[in-house]
Length: 400
Image 1 (cartoon, helix red, strand yellow):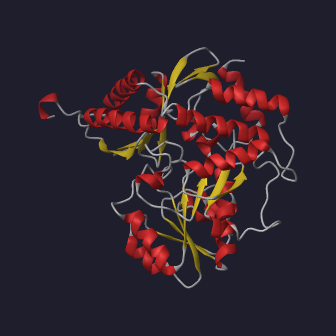
Image 2: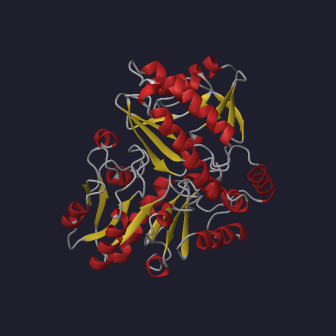
Image 3: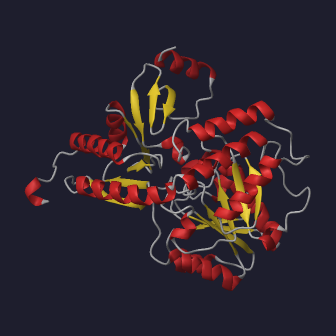
């Protein structure tokens, strides 16, 4: 089938919930993907920060193949070696003691909310404006963007929102019924928003003073994306609960709640569960993906390549009045424009580079951590050409 055939079948048989780009992908290798017509692209979206180890990494592919021939699923009624080995590895790379396995980031956040309420005996969860925490009814309510909520009212109670980065607003929102504060250490869907200096540390201190749990949603920022294994390390903050997914499985769907021993012990048999959570296939894939990140030193590579990419993007952006800011950490970078960035995404795709537009005006780059400097040079060149097409008044070289 060609791209049009696939698009026609999608329109006929699939619920139309996605604003898809007119591109049907066939396969990928490393930081490259190919469409069904055979055209190649540099993938700087990585399946929304999922493919941190790139496409079809041999170690992940072999782990999935080997495990699929042994056992795919058996339910959590029984123990499996794959699950306990992955749980041990996650406690070694994070500041936490215990793991609950889920299938997605939304499920992980949903479970974290339940755990916080069970542990504290309180009901209120404070989140922030512009945040994104998932698509279930509870997590979409925790999300601080009305466009995701309006069609699904009435929404569950017990959630409130304050401006991201405003510590005074956070203090004023806390009540005697506050169980937890849930934050993204860097807001992803909101436009790659990096918090003000000291903000996360101040929230951490307030939580300790008021006996409130701090949940960090590291679903997009985790596993080396920001130049640290987790962004909590980047900001020197140790949360009570961390939620993870996306890059955890190297492309296979798996998520988890990580918590400290005293908090995790609040969950007792029957309190929470998942039919597919922590299945042997997902755990084998995740263990392999995390080992690749460790063995190939991809956390340091994210830091190094992120600094290289950001510096080149800043130099490029200085030519264009329509660029407001280049921001981010590691290989999680946003280019904010003064107008909608849809045309940049389209032009870049036509020139063989896949990027994403988020928050309407932010070009978001989330390349695999295995991308090379030479490939990043191509990305910058393509974005430069795309911005030149959009910009009516590029700054002359003499003004740079």
